[in-house]
Image 1 (tube, rainbow, N blue to C red):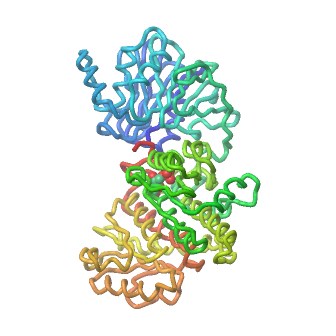
Image 2 (cartoon, rainbow, N blue to C red):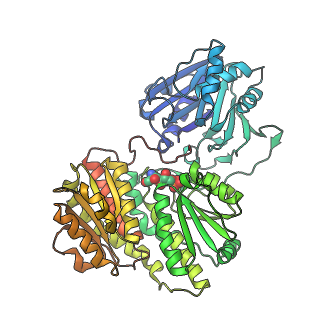
Image 3 (cartoon, protein in one colour):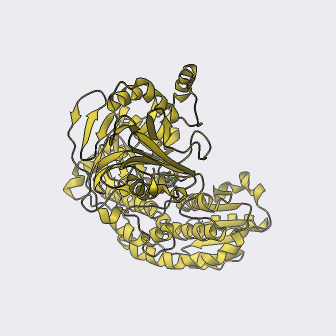
Amino acid sequence: MCGIVGFIGKKRAAPVLAKNLKKLEYRGYDSAGIATLAKGSFHLLRCAGPVAGLRGGGMLAGTCGIGHTRWATHGAPSEENAHPHIYGRFAVVHNGIIENYHALKEECEKRGEAFSSQTDSEVIAHLLERYYMGELLEALRAVCARLRGSYALAVMCANEPETIALAREKSPLIAGYSDGGTVCASDIPAVAKQGAELYAIEDGECAVMKKERITFYGMGGGEIDKSPLAFDPETEAPYRCGFPHFMKKEMAEIPAVLKAARPNLGDFRYEAFYEALCRAEHLQIAACGTAYHAGLAAKFAFESLARVRTEVSVASEYRYCDPIVPDGTLMLAISQSGETADTIAAARLAKERGAKVVAIVNAESSSLAALADYVIPVRAGREIAVAATKTFNAQLAALYSIAASLAEYRKKRGYGDVLAQLPGLAEAALAAGEGVRSWVPYFVGASSVYFIGRGADYVAALEGCLKLKEISYLPSEGYPAGELKHGTLALVEKNTPVVAVLTSRRLAEKMMSAIEEVRARGAKVFLITSLCEYAVAEGVTLSVVVPECGEIFSPALSVIPLQQLAYYVSIARGNNPDKPRNLAKSVTVE
Ligand code: M6R
């Protein structure tokens, strides 16, 4: 969370910084700020809210500067808490969390230093002022040695013109050559351009940016040689391509993504992974949010098709539950960004306890990919909307494919050619899903919404519920339909919208009983089904029929109308579906 940028070149830095920051807004938009350095003085502009609020920023003097877009952790999303923080001769932007900032701040306050923000980050500027002995990089190294937690840092010193020092520990940071100068950023799209040359700064590394050169160092030692990152400026560029929102564009990409995401495990690049997969005796999956739901859906495929025991954990719980990692465990860490701190920590722990780790990621040059033994890219292309849509379908396609290969290897259940048909079926699901627009009036003013399903349909219900909460702000709960009567049913009242997902013929009658139960309490039932006969069942207010693709793979299709429902309800409630409040795309803090 939080995006940082830096630039040194021949032109004014501020317009470049503002433009690049805008492309990082998916990382947070609680406040923004830019500081430039000209003739030994800092020029600062900050605002609460998104980067667009930095009016007049282009006029700031100086060809060297740093910028920040914030997702608030410590301190309210106000202008005074916006980065850059300036203290004495230093300006600092920080992404991450300084866990020991209380103690460090107290130490500074005892020395008579006054703080102007409630952030954990300002203490870094204070420490730089204390440790500076005439060399910015050395001061930064000394400060980093005092910090506990996570950070990507870009800092400037009024005494050192046209210099930015960088450091990284557990928060992403790249640096390189773009925009006619040297640049740094939290992520590639901020600075990806034709001809740009970019390098990843790894944990425990630092760097010095000058106008024409960047030098990379180990935190404690000498220079490091790096190879440039491979990226495609076309696909990295965040364009809406005529769609009203990124979320709409990204949902429209689902059919194509379902095709691209399936790894060809026969390819020599996956040889080592395939061998490890076939040897695996247990699978553990750790992930967060939507990626966790992809893991839950994959469990059905791994267990039912390949008969391999699969445990799925929320990554933030896995890492603190002293997990048992039996011999022969393969850990699948699923993450769109590959930068989710909890997922990375869970993968690291599993590795320490003897598991081989597979990173199922959309961002191939991510921290998770770097620590994993094997990487399966899901190739969904850049996802900008904070709510994950196409990457969920892509994760499913990759995981189903892996499960199917494993089933084949173990000569277990066949799955037909359904996976190859999914892209075409998804086209039909997208078209049918537009039908949810007629559902919107029932949801827009609701005080709560329930999503129910059984088996894999329950997983789709959970994901639909997360989408609705995230972008419409309607309190919602996803529930296994059979469990309602054990408590949650008490919350259902007259006109409460209940979204039921029903694609399992095996469980259809059970599901219809649950629908009866909520209907009897006055609920309005909205059905997403692949079983046409139930679409018009008594008691169903409105329904959408998606193509049938078998119970196990069904979430890849049934989730589509659920994503569309969340999108249209969000708009009807006056929200921007691409930028839900309080959230950020990439959660790089614990
Ligand atoms: O980048 P990751 O896949 O690791 O992100 C995990 C979650 O933060 C993410 O899926 C989040 O739940 C989405 N905003 C949901 O739409």
